[in-house]
Image: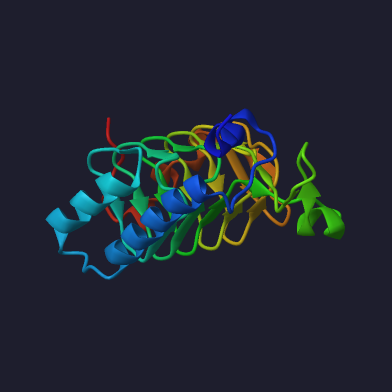
Length: 212
């Protein structure tokens, strides 16, 4: 089994393996090149992001700078917006649905290191060869989600459709659809309902109205 296949199987893998280092180096270079562009370098940015990611939906936009660890393990839907300093450590697959909005400094991580320090330093394969190992769990974010500034999404988390995650939250467990959630660790505060509509805030709407 290849080291990349081990990632997808959810078992220990060697992040320093040549095949994985080559994938990461390519993504790191392309991420850095994207981060050096200006936001009006539209065509160049589109070319680069298509080289970095497995999927980048029509109408989506990344302010930059960005950082993708593998890049090819991430799929992003249509009409999404990502503010400054997006970091996605996509050892395991990361999926983001349509119409999501991310504030500045959002981080998504998938790898997990052993808790015991001696196991973080080294483990041994069947032939007694020392290896530095970790494993990873996928992250899935549904459609129409808003993640505030400085949100961290941890390995293995699934966030349902239509969720709002408050600024500074550390999401360590699944968040069901239609939830307002926040905190460290992130917890569901309540369900989002029609009572939250902007039509109930006419002083803020200033004549604007939702789509019909």
